[in-house]
Image (tube, rainbow, N blue to C red; front, top):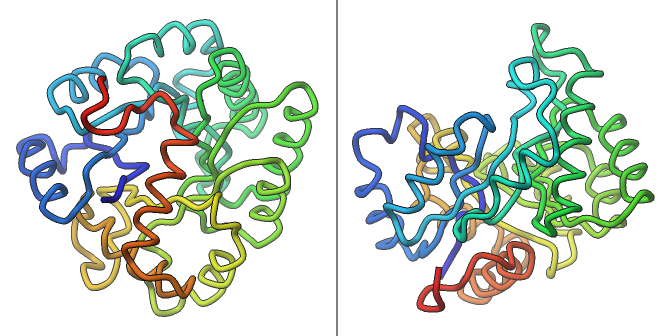
Length: 264
């Protein structure tokens, strides 16, 4: 049994076949998935997907690519939208300086800090997006953790070793996507092997970043199993043990997500 801790079922790639996506995931042993918010304004969309599929949970938040669209989202607004029983987290929010036309760094940081405040207030974990922003992200996370603890995961980890180490020192989880299966991802596999076993998660970030042998195709939650097999091999663990480990880790972090057969 596996959990895809991060996918985007609201994207056009899946619009015509969400039931099929969920069915294929179950056939592959992926019994749960979290569809991740990119805009607070779309909270109703994520909620509807989760309500229609009993193996799907959702989050509420503003992706850094949308920070300019939702620059002043209030922590109280985010927190209020998490009351639904299938809303299990905050985000994704973070810092992304990869593109020249990204929102200004100050705006991204303000939005990120609002989400951290919402995570702190609700007790729900924050899903963190970090790309080409390692030093700034480390500074913000350390500063905010001094203000008060909060739970979080560095999702789709592809940053440098220092950010992984800093996140672990702050008590964060680290999640790996299909990137870890790519032949040239030697450094990333080394980082994964150094993450404490009780802090590691697995995800797809579907529809992006399909793992080998599906690279170049539309990614989907069923492929969580392929990424998990690669990570299990990297960690020197039997696949079944790694699946059980990451599922247990998921439920510790996303504590509001009741395991199958245990309510909402």
